[in-house]
Image 1 (cartoon, rainbow, N blue to C red):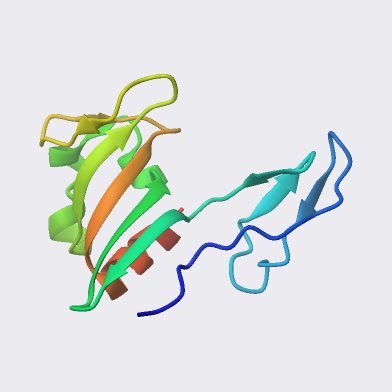
Image 2: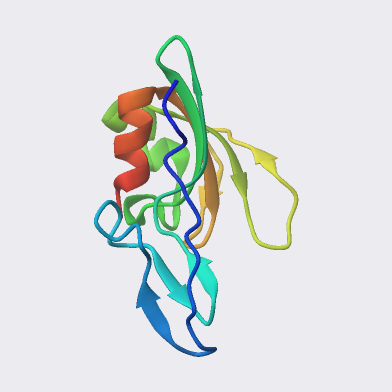
Length: 122
């Protein structure tokens, strides 16, 4: 089993400043703003022994303001969106008619390589 994709490096950023994280060689979309991590990519990750993974990621732009049926992540990227989490709202199990918004977190499952590639989409 691989180490989870996400690490949370320390920073000494002052409030209101942004600096690249120490992960920037791996993930140039990880930034710290005033000491808080902003990750664009995988946030949580579990890899099972049989090349199957589940991850939480921010919704990529091709999903914004579309239902899962319209964006078709399963047929286009080989992953299943298990659920959607919106800020301030409860977790929702994903259905074809589920609308994905810009700042939604998606719970994604599927073959490890496909989940990792999906989580790297912007």
